[in-house]
Image 1 (cartoon, helix red, strand yellow):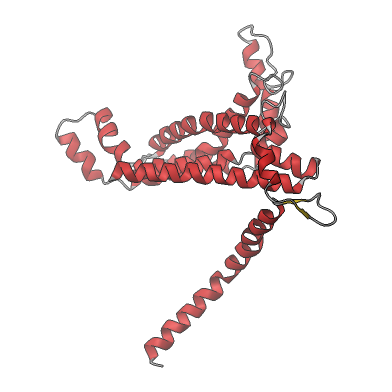
Image 2 (tube, rainbow, N blue to C red):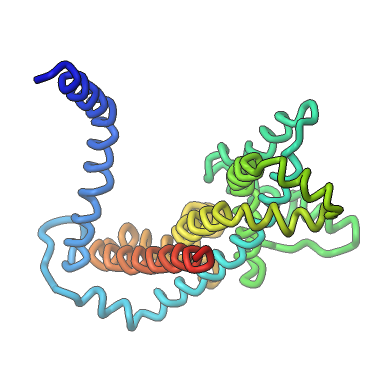
Length: 293
């Protein structure tokens, strides 16, 4: 073997050694569970004893399960409310911090702090904010003689209250994505437009927004995947109530698996949710490709 071939082989072996831990981790904790869950979705299994094969019975049960489809609607409503507002606020924050002003890094760090806050801790903070007795939001309402609102125990406000928390927590992450996109746009384009007499508003709509289109698509697809899997905030803040107004598919799957010990049905619901997420992601991606064609 030539010296070039030996060097190439050595580089390949070194690369494999470095990525081996990640490959092993993904295989054990991601790939294997998918196939185990697929098998369980075809069985009747309580978590103990033997799994009894029942074919597609769990999937047929889903089609007639009104609780599941109600959870799907709640999940979609949550996603539809979170995504547009989250993208808009993230973009505005990115435009705000996309300057070379002294100390701007501090503001970027402040806006990013909610992202590194664990979801459980963030949920507990917002439970306190929403508290009808000692919450700061009801204190502010009292200044205008508005009676206290039990945000998390009212079916008409519970989901919207969680939406606000989710937007607050996710805006910092998307702000960074948008900021990277903004800093990738050549300054020459803005300077040329300014010389032609284009106003700042016109430059934003003619240059910034079109060139950020790939970022919009990325943020949208990742947002769809993330919001449709929402579980922790509902579990901590409302437990799915009141009157199941905040019961998402993720929470329903948890209940089926660990409250009712119906692992097979929970696995089947997981696969249906996965298919829904995959379909929406592919549609969003194809829509972007068609617009660019």
